Length: 489
Image (cartoon, rainbow, N blue to C red; front, side, top):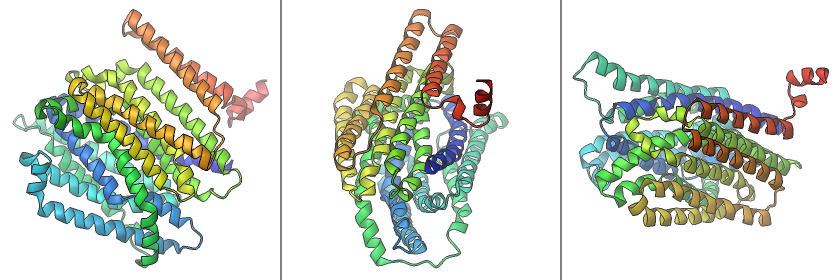
């Protein structure tokens, strides 16, 4: 129970930084979509960011999760593991950044951006820094220092938002001749990431740097399946964005990618919840692996994760008539993909929660197979359907890919390392959320968007919350409120 409370506390701190950060980052969506001249310009931004997301996985090569596994092995010298991981990831990142700068022209041409080579260069150097930062940030999580972790994440967002507001809103008002283009976003990201790198220097000093060949070999043996898993996993997220401008005619593809990229930002609250949960959950899972009630912790965590993601789904869809103003009018034709993308994100979160069975028994190869299977399905859906359905194929491809990986992981996991997930309770929550969502759609179709729809949607959301409180969060168990509840009763 103590671990569950620790999970809730750390998730709240990590989640607060993620929620505040993501909320401020949402300001970038209207900033870009209302100021950029075309959807295709925003498509360039999303295309390059999708490629750097894949590079981030390659450059960290599963070392983040591997770090936690080896730091919690009693026979290992903790700081020797940490310094070995730093040197492994750092050497790869420095080499990558040097090669990018040396061969920037051919790299930009291969990526279809010969006229925007420094967009590519800036983002690739940025992602090299981000990849190296993953290890010091993981160390902060291992040491249970969520406040510094969250503070640095918020500092990055604050700097990024401030500089973007200056470049895209303030400067055009000061200087009418100021030319707005997407290149500023890449330069600002590089600047902010470099500042955060400087802020992490204290996590890189005060201990003896040692490279342990024995630990390195063991870590690589553990991490390479995670690398395959990570590649397949990130491709499930970004393959559609990478393929869209390359399967369709380039200008049309970037136009559709701009619309798709803007609308999925609204759906990314699911990724936010999953990420916050992961930051808190991963260290606790490995440290409590030998506890007798560890499986009960995993089962309860899964249920509460699903409950709160379903609540987030209902909130976003219930207030979509408000959220739609986050994107410029020319991008709103793609709003219909939002519930589809959110369902895919819920599946991804469930898959992440299911993944610990093979990580804890050092059989990470299973994760690689599951993710590759999901990735194969996603690619097939995208390649076959993008020519006809455009960005709609990308949305449904995510559901198909994550759904495949999720189902396979559950089936095999229950045979290899069974966990008593409360399937009936989970199914009840999914059913209730589906019914409430259907009612929202029926009312909107009948009366059209307006105040009546918002009021009705709010009632539906409150009903879901009420059911959750009555079923799994009784008021009598809550602090302060519980005392008053018992007294009145």
